[in-house]
Structure formats: structure tokens, C-alpha cells
Image (cartoon, rainbow, N blue to C red; front, top):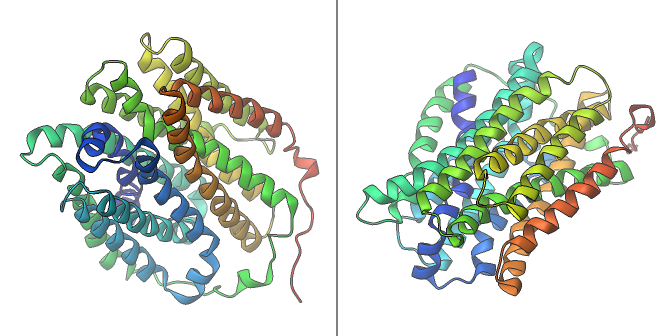
Length: 384
């Protein structure tokens, strides 16, 4: 089951990261503007957020086994659609469909991990996050190489259906051996939406992941604009995701105290180093800036999940809080690439966007100081 979970995790990001290295060809073939092209990253992230908010309905009406299988099928179909032609409607449809599939899986998977690996849940959650980010790196690094080996360059995007098919083949028989434990209606009694701290966590999670969304969409085009090849630019994005994988594995292992602020501030400081490097010295030490940003983003992702779990002792409440945080957060994060596309169209350069995200990091650092454990909400509203 652990191997199957890693295989599934590897399929959660290539749909997003495979676009950036081929964006010049896609824009030339489809006629998309930078603003419309940004939707190829924005739509899946918004869909992921919407599905997270609908997580309660999904868990009550669809079995976990079926939910993951349906999600993988949507990713497969979304990837295969890209084989047809590099037209904007086809590409946007594939992005939305794949984003829905990813969103369904991300709703269900924390529950699966908690039940299957209760004694090793933090480690397995870190491994899941690392697989998720590592898959993003593979999408960025391998797509331009596959395109170079293929007569039809956009077929490289469709090849990402293959690992999803392998994951589905592994999941279906393995999941039969792990019956669900029913608590489908338990979450309906808790109201998270009324608590201001839930919205604060959603905003926090969203702005952090907004930086990730903009980087996977625009980092390769930024370096191609500076005169680098698609292969180098895709590899740079892959190295950023290698840093994410390392951050997702290492920083949560250091989280031995109830106060998470020091590690979160460290993760944000690394992001700031990366963005400042992209702004001031993009042609020098570009690998260092990419890895620094990656470690910061990768470490912040699971730390945010742990931070939300810290806010409630009851697993039902904490689970719903995490789902709400991810729902609001991914919707905010999905708007980030779109905003970046607008800034690129208006300014003619990506530097304005990196400055914007550096300012966001400063705001996140100030917000981090508010997460004092003694001030966590002690009660959460419940229905009668």
C-alpha cells in the first residue's frame, strides 16, 4: 500500500508542471495570450480547492476506493486529451478535468493514510508530500526531453497518462484489502466556516501555494525569455521540485515542539532568498535560487497541514479544518498564476511578479507570528 500511495502521489503534479517548458510552442500553436495560458495552471488549482471544500459530500457519498479510482481516471483522460491537438479549448478542458481528478484524490488520501499508517502518520504524510512534489519535478524535467524524441511534440503531454494508469492498476486490487471504517457522517456536525482562525489558515496556505503556482507556470518561460533553452528551463523547475521534496521530508522531521513558528519562518526565509535571487541575479546561481525556493515551499506545505492539525484535538474537527484550509487555499493559489499572467502582459516581464511574491512572503512572516499555541481556538462551533 505504501508503494501504491507513492505511485499515486507522483501523479498529482505533472499535469501542472509539464506545461511550463513547452509554453512557447503551446502559445504559438494555439494563439493563447499569457493571461489565457495562465489558466492551464490556475484551473486545476481552483478545481482542487473547490473539491476540498466539497470533501464532506465526497466522503459521505462515494467510497474511498472508488474516489481514488475516479480521480486517476480523470487524470488519465485529461492527459490523453492533450494528444489531440494543442488548441486552447482542448488544453483548458484537459486542465480542468485533471484538476478535478487531483482534487478528489487529495480529499480522500489523508484519511487513507491516517487509517492505514496510524502509528507512522507524520512520516507517511511527509513521504506522500515528497512523492507529490517529486512528480512535479519529473513533469518539468522529462516533458521537454520526451518532446524532443517525438515527431509530434505535444504528444509528450499525453505520456503522463502512463504513470496514472500504473497507479490505477496498483490501487484497485490493493485497496480491496483495506476495508473502510465508517465515520462518513461525523464531520457534518462541525462548523468550521464560522471560525476566523479557519479563514486565516486558508489565506496563509493559499498565499504560500500561490508562490508555487506562479513558479511552476512561469519559471521556465522566464528563463527562456533570458535566452536559456527549454531543456535548461525545465531542468531548473525540476531542481526546484527536488528542493521541495527535500524540504517536505526534512523540515517536518524537525517539528518536535508544539510551536511551529520557527520552522515556518525558516521555510519562508528560504523562499525570500529564492525570489530575491530571481529578481536581482537571475543569470547567476540560478540553481541555488531555484533550490532555495523549492526547499522553502516544500517544507511549508506539510508544516501548514501540521499547523492546522494542531488547532484541534479531535480528529474529526482537525480533518475538516485541514480540508477547509486546503479548499480556500487552493482557490487563492489558483488565482496566483492568472494574476501573474496579467502582470506579465502589462509589464512585459516576470520580475514584477517575483517582487509581488517577495512582498507576500514578508506578509506571511508577520502572519506567522500570530500562530502562538496558547492562543489556538479552544472550541469550534457545532450544530445541534
